[in-house]
Amino acid sequence: MAKNQSDYFQAKHPWSETKDDLLACYLTPFFTKVYRPSRNGILYIDAFAGAGLFADGSKGSPLIALSKYFAIAKKNRSKTPIQFILSESNAESRKHLESTFNEAKGASGYIKPPIIVSSCEDAIRRAQQTSVCGGGKPSTVFYYIDPFGVKDLRLDLLTNSPNMAHTEALVNFNSFGLFRVACAAMKVPLSLPNEVELPEDDFNELTKASVWVERLNACIGSGDWKEVVVRYKAGKIDAWQAEHALSELFCNNARSYYKYVTNMPIKDMSKRVNVGGLVKYRMIHMTNSPDGCVLMNDNMIKRNLDRQCKQLGLFAVDVDGRNVETAVIAAKASDFVQHMPVHQNMKMGDIAATLISECGVFDRSNTILKTYVGPMIEEGVLERAVKFTLKGKPKKSFALKDEVYRAR
Ligand SMILES: C[S@@+](CC[C@H](N)C(=O)[O-])C[C@H]1O[C@@H](n2cnc3c(N)ncnc32)[C@H](O)[C@@H]1O
Image (cartoon, rainbow, N blue to C red; front, side, top):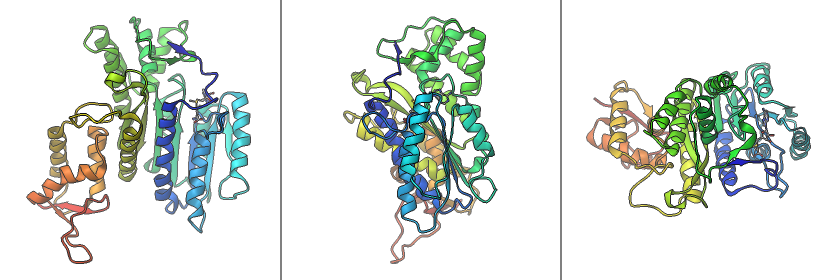
């Protein structure tokens, strides 16, 4: 069913609150982590920025980010400059955004006057040319990409930041929207269940299929989406499986540019109750930092438990409700360790981030380390770099910064 978005900024839907919580709760540890090391400043791009404030007074994504930054800056005497680049295509929303953002920003000099433009492409282009301070490339870059559908989403927008090693992205990926366009492009009939609502302006039936093929390739980063449609047409997978497969494709393509990619469905919990809610879209996080991956994983686990789990089942499941394959994860952990150089220290967080990126979001990082790294320490395959606490007791912690090395 097509959904008109004209009332979007009246009040937030419960699933939009889940999405906003995911961003808000990540930005506090993220800004804390990058604040001091970012000597050349931070560049924050919100490419589908919206109106700033909703009619009911709740904060939209740019004001959420600004308030989180203020809170961290307040705790630090020396100030790290930040440049916000915001884009919003709707002229009225853009005007509202400009006034609400500037009012919230106030006179603070370390928060540069925002660059506000009308298209996401322009925002990304400006980001590639903007230095925050000192004339050099920004120390840290964060993209927040929150479109209504997939029309303006392109993976390549996120692969050319001025400092890829220190870039993170959080993307709203409308996998059902993408599936609908993919079926139309290949002239495969699709009847989605009525409860699936898709943005109405995302898809124009008159547009030539060849144009959509090009757009889809750019959106997802390859042409592999066609195989998903072929499998759907042959009855080998259903629409729900196709939605999941397309999001996995996008994540895999993103892994060519970002070492760690995680993915969490955002659900309407009032629908499809018997299968754990209706997937509205997915939030996909990309980073080259193991700490960033682990922080987002723990954030996703918490948001999912708080807002998307009505009851805990008998078996451990990941954020997608799929059974956790402990033997597969243990084999991946063992394989990772076998490829570590002997006697070279590695942070436990690096091992956790690799397992999360490869196996999905299924547990808190601390529990992952206890479950999969703990036995390898007991067997003597891994040894702790620091074996005793300051009080002389054997170290037993599984903190991200704890180091281990391969002993044999
Ligand atoms: C889902 S809303 C974003 C909501 C926002 N992140 C918030 O939390 O308030 C998507 C926004 O993107 C805008 N938009 C659509 N196409 C755009 C484009 N090509 N460039 C920039 N903004 C666009 C829409 O007008 C809409 O306000």
